[in-house]
Image (cartoon, rainbow, N blue to C red; front, top):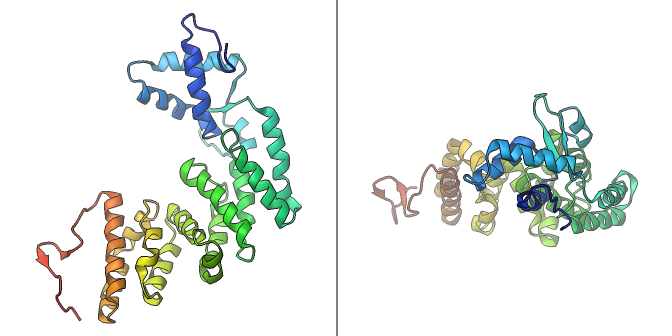
Length: 302
């Protein structure tokens, strides 16, 4: 019998189910039971019924491999759940690793920069079996500091992985946004030492539909020699909604740039807006067409 082999069903179906459940939970840490059930129903529409999945989850919980928690029990993970009927599932395995990483995380309470960096690398080395909870993400967010570029960059990598890839949100989003925005104010030194840092910041702000993304885009379009140098930072699906929500402001900015003779930035801004529409499924238009049915290539619009 394998480590997650339960040997409960005669045909060992619980073993296969348990192994896949472990892999799924390993990527999220703690997950709504409803989401787990939905995963198996969609992946195996003819293999598992709702009743079968619930029975298997109950068997695995009774075997001591997972814990099914109610809305009160999940508060220790920093999750506030208003619906008392909702259940969550968390793995009980790897308790020793969990205790170790939890102890390492305490360095963020009073450790120096080197201690915190060491803690981040240690946490990252266990990312396949350990997932940070919302309260821990809050602590990481509070440690963002433009005067400590390397620490800030490594924190952003972990925050991006949890928020964007694993959909685990901090419990105090306003604090996170408040710590992210100053990283865009004076970013010359940040860009030199960690060019990818700014992209993480813009992606995270975009995830929360924050207007700081638009303010930075406007600044870049007006001050940079070539906006296309940072176009990829704005072309993500995470920024699409906030960009499209400010369609009028950005349309007028295109007009302003064209009037000022900043043709490269006009084109780059138009491409950024087009990509946002494509990411939202609104449009898929040819770059040479600025107005439907009218070819404006080479036309002087000043």
